[in-house]
Image 1 (cartoon, helix red, strand yellow):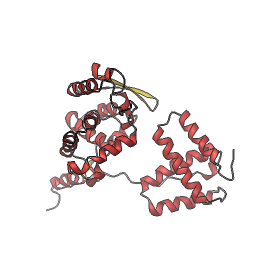
Image 2: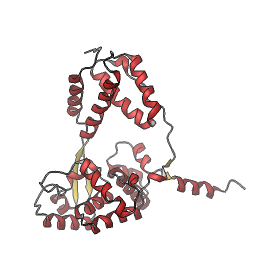
Image 3: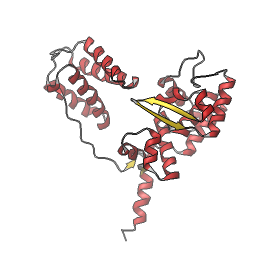
Length: 280
């Protein structure tokens, strides 16, 4: 293609190509938004390496490093798609942190308060959804695989990112899921649905979780689906101390990814330093 000016149909084509590569819908939407933001910033100017670098500097001035790199990944993929490898950008080098941001850590006590608040406010589906994600460590995009059949057998077959894995469901959770499905007259298929029978979207799940924060007395910045997955990972590892098994359960291709989930909190890291007793 070797385009000098970026056209809207190229962005649409890029997203269609990402779909063919079986990328997640959320990733496709995010990449499309990143490219569109860059095009809007260009404001009709031709695509050059200098403009791409200037956009990178603009992002660095107002965004966190991880956010900048995520945007660069979207742009680099687009540049390759349209035949403009000459515009590809280098990622920011970010030193790996050795502890988690404590202000973002969701404790098991806070998790229980969220479940209890949801139940107390008549949000039965939300309470069960929280327990399902928190009790299995599934991704929010994998909720659709929690079916009546999965609850009956105690195992769910999850197909995502070109891989298929089997996860086991706690027996107590299975009983709760089947009881809820029976009450909602769901005889087969996905258990978590809207009133019209459609699958819950990521946005709906996110919004429902945020709606219960105040009642539970939990900081809203801690409450999002992926944080439940982090909480599960920490609890699972503390129980079995097997990072390889945890990686399999979470569906990670690399143990390095799993290690990110197991970083200690800042407070825990501080206690570990104090126990060394190297300062008299």
